[in-house]
Amino acid sequence: MTRNYNRNPLRIFIGVGHGGTDPGAVNHKLGLTEAGINLSVALLMQTDLRRHGVQVKLSRSVDEEDRLKEEIAECNAYAPDFAVELHTNAGGGTGFEVYYQLEPWEHSKPSMELARLFDTNVCKYLGADTRGLKTDRSLGWLNQVQAPCILVENFFLDGPNALWYSQPEQLEKLSRAYVRSILEYYGIAYIPDGSVSLRYQVVGADDSVKDYVCPAVLVNGSHYVHLRQMAKSLGLAVYYEEAAKKILLYPPESYTESGVQNRLVKNSEYTTDMDRVMAGLDVLTNAAVEST
Ligand SMILES: [Zn+2]
View: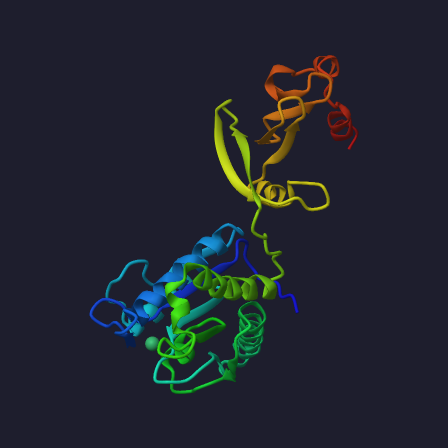
């Protein structure tokens, strides 16, 4: 059930429930606060989403006051493709819970489908029970956010899985199940763990060179899948310098790949077709332009 989003990159807003003088639910025995758990999950989600090229905004990224009204205003100003509000359940119970939006109609369907993915993936990746999909017209978050949105209640912090919250690897699993759900819905492939850091350089029109690193995986023998997408969105071309094993991104209006010289050459250095032929550059483009 892949859905398209109108803008590139995808924009996600994460409401981080409670904070500051409002800790939310508290488990004194284990020293857990809902505000703290919500923030941990949000920060993990942010990191994971960003490495997939998704734009993320959190309602707060530290322990501070964060009232629902302000969260909603901030979310609507950001105009995300999808918004999720994080809470942690309490009061004696088990299982994961998720609420979806009923109105307006055009948001209701994506909200429900996203809620279902969250529910399915929490089951699948944490092997835990869930309380199913719910909706509640009295929840301000669901009523006032002007984008498809859901509200999740993480596992009970006073339930049988409460100890998970003191285990970083379990927190990571939970946030990853959420991230996978979002990416799955929007048709973005999840980059598995063990992906490599790919170094590349961006060559500017003024010959400047800057170093960057991005996550990448081998897909069909190529490391470039995500890098190529990113380059394309920036209007840059990708060149792999075989001998130096270097990846260069360059503005195609300023440089051309030279097969003969095995490097990028500056277009302004080769103004005539003869120059370009001698440099091993393609002159067909110019010829094609002249003939039209
Ligand atoms: Zn709460």
